[in-house]
Image (cartoon, rainbow, N blue to C red; front, side, top):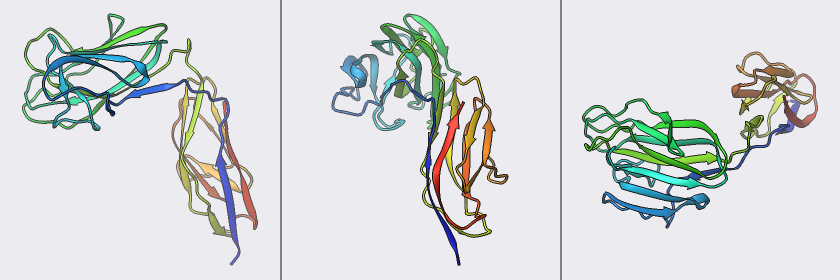
Length: 260
């Protein structure tokens, strides 16, 4: 039985991504205790985080260490980020079991730029994890603050974790992001190989993404209809499937190229 073999690389063009910092509170610098108190620490990226009426994640973590904000009146987390912020995100969830409604807001240089939907407004625990993301796009030193909405003095415990931000670059950068690993395929002549997939995403593009397979391969977005090339929407985000055509005998290798 004759078989086909290949080595294939994923290639992409015109893609420079700004630096990203993620504050996950993992490390010896994390000095938040199990008591609600005020304090500060220097975290990842060199930012000084100040916390008020906050404690560690206790029994309500998101992913390892985290910070629980106590109540709207005096509990918040704040830091000044040098060099500006492009995109900003963090994860949050209900902590403790009280039924008071939680609703978080993000301040940038003293102004509210994002407010969450109400969550946790029922008695009992809730392990649902939420993720917020906001295009801040502010240059210079940027002060961010996360707190519960309002000035209530009643508890509205909320866990915060995995705070991420990108540096400000003046404008959104067109990006084609391809990720994944393709291992070697083999098949018999006349039979396409089993497909493998990788993830592709277009960010801040104005033209379609052209995806081209090298000789001997074909690609698809639905794992059913395969062709040698694809034209995908600028904001495409999903899987691209790859397989050997099996049309002719030989060894095949090359790059899948992505351009916009």
